[in-house]
Figure 1 (cartoon, one colour):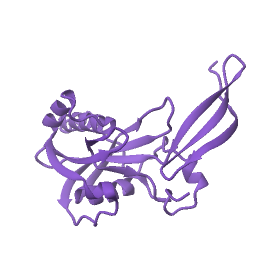
Figure 2 (cartoon, rainbow, N blue to C red; figure 1 turned 120 degrees about the horizontal axis):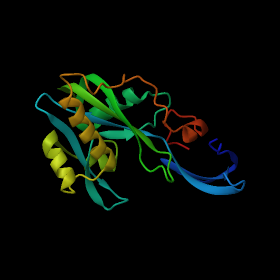
Figure 3 (tube, helix red, strand yellow; figure 1 turned 45 degrees about the vertical axis):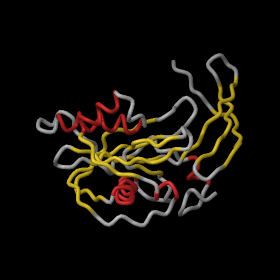
Length: 216
């Protein structure tokens, strides 16, 4: 019988706007209790927006943790109280790429770093694209963001060349190419965009009143 890992007590070590750190004491199979530090996160969405020419919308922005600009899919935090993942994805696609889509589907739910972090990201495929007005940038990083349409096959080549390294972008690009290759025979069906996001983190959202969950 599989062991039932239970948290016997927990301590919040850090509470910052977009993440928190807690220490859980967890029962182990041998009968003891071990400490596990967990990085809490709000969760995120990302969008592989593919046009009729087979190009995916990509953005480049500075990521301070790695000290360089990365090519990524339009993406953002689930930081609005009560906002569904697909609504967050629609908002982020407009804010970061100036696009709206008529056709949405869920391609993948990704747990980025399960060894220590509860962050999970839902990756959507968006098609039927139209240009819409992009809101004025509200953050310093967004003001420095670049945009490019990249052919899906070329995006895969750039992954193998080490030019696209963001893990969510890598997964989303390969998933989008696989879905579109099977579009004619329905061999790679997408989930409904409103389907339950079971892995969506809830720790921070439960503690915060909102509507902006980055506010502690």
